[in-house]
Image (cartoon, rainbow, N blue to C red; front, top):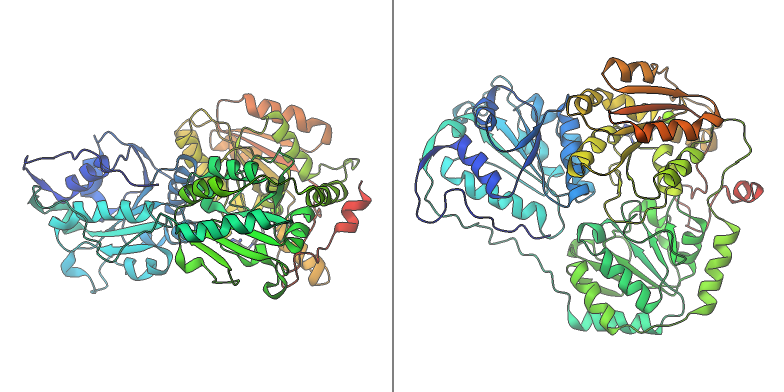
Length: 576
Ligand SMILES: Cc1ncc(C[n+]2csc(CCOP(=O)(O)OP(=O)(O)O)c2C)c(N)n1
Ligand SMILES: [Mg+2]
């Protein structure tokens, strides 16, 4: 993903005098921005005045956190840079969770925050916060503008840094006096980033070494992370997997990079991954990691992770290599380019024994649930949504069991189809993410599969969906509990359900009060009809599914255990 230089609004020789706020808007447009999310306040008034008649679709959330998640999901769904604006102090502070979410999941974003007047900084001025200090650890880069002459250059640099290399959020803090100061705009336009270098081309010798290892391997596994999606490398991944005949497992964020309907798909690996993916990783002789970072939810106990495997790691971020596990063949660079090169050097290999072993695991331990239960099973809802949308919907999620069931039971076929907070695990992400994704993809069916308590955190954004007339769907997997935490309490704290049950509002009534459509479903036989009606609805639509309260997510690798030490396999087998 390169940020392409666009024709400048005041290009070649044309000089004019403009206020900082106008320069901000013109530079955003020059960078190709046509959609922004943000919330007003005192120190961004000059900027918002310039946005009044700018050709930018501006979405106002009900809380800056919501706006930040919307910009993040807009970026994930479109591949473009998401842009969010907030005022100083409380506005900027409300961005922190959203920035950390984007940082952990490597999402390209630019956040603009207003700041108090330059001469007041450090005075505890009204609505002053040390925004660059507060956001430094949750941004890829941030800075404060000190001179209006730097505004255009810094914005260009922000887009470049956000979208190249390992993508991430960049924040620019702009004191209000800079917004109103006027300056000539014919100054130098070049970026000044001498220390910022991105290596995109993989080393040919490393690529050949990787190809050689693949050609020799009897039991290889491709382990794909979100980096393949952000590098737009899904096509290249599919070609490599097909040419060399490799099974593919994906992380939560990697879902969609490979078509899960294919026999070679091992689906998700890790703590709530498939038994067949986890067994395959533990027994493979070669693990080919691409755009993944060996997160603890994926590896389980590090010392016993993939014990027999040689490890190839393809990643744009050199800091990820050998961070958690020792890598035998690192290839640093852009996944799209490297996979393309690698495919040229690999050979087809039947690997009959390996694939028949995988087929056995797949047959013995598929994701299962009790289909005969009288209660509504959460997995049934996800399966029904998947079949009625023919695997084509964009799915966003909350965090917890709802998220894991969405990942396990929806079979994704395309990149940018599954939008979920992986690294930070931010409850409240699902609804604003659905809004951001629907704005990026107006023609797509966008469904937030949410948890009741995740939804509680940002449900006010339903008003944003109503105002923007977005046909988003919200399916609340309403178990009454903070289900995932309750599951841990059931398994590891002797069923002492400490502070994990809260009373909930009647969500259908809440939805209707906010101007959306709201339905409640408490009978299993009504599930298909409710989903059908929801999909036909043009207005924002919420369905409150009253599900089995104490359903668990299986299998589960308990924290600190090895990937093959899964709990719940007996339960899954008993449902066969
Ligand atoms: C902002 C935030 N606070 C706390 C947590 C810890 N946490 C993880 S899952 C979870 C429960 C989620 O409950 P719900 O949204 O109802 O989802 P369920 O597991 O029931 O599907 C909690 C509290 C978190 N991930 N994010
Ligand atoms: Mg819940």
